[in-house]
Amino acid sequence: MAWDDKGFREELDRLGEREVRAILARGDQWANLENRRNTANDWLRAKEEERSSAAAARKEVREEESLSISRRALANSERATRISIIAILLSGVVAIVEVIKWLSK
Image (tube, rainbow, N blue to C red):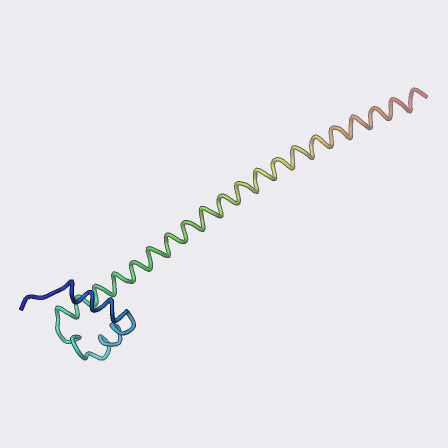
């Protein structure tokens, strides 16, 4: 009978990682059959890579969100600085007007 890698991978999916690891650790069932053991180890590595890829994607999304927030904060800070400068200039104009009024009395 030919080796059914796809069918065995489906069985691994049904069992789940925890059970597959337990079977490999105990060395029972199919764990002593080289082709099944190798397929199971490959399957476990693939699952780990999937988790790593998903974690990397989530990290990238968080970094992009953080960068976006930082850019908005910078824009708000620059806007606040411009408003403050305008307020200082207007205060100076008002002070000059008041000094001129006082001197003209």
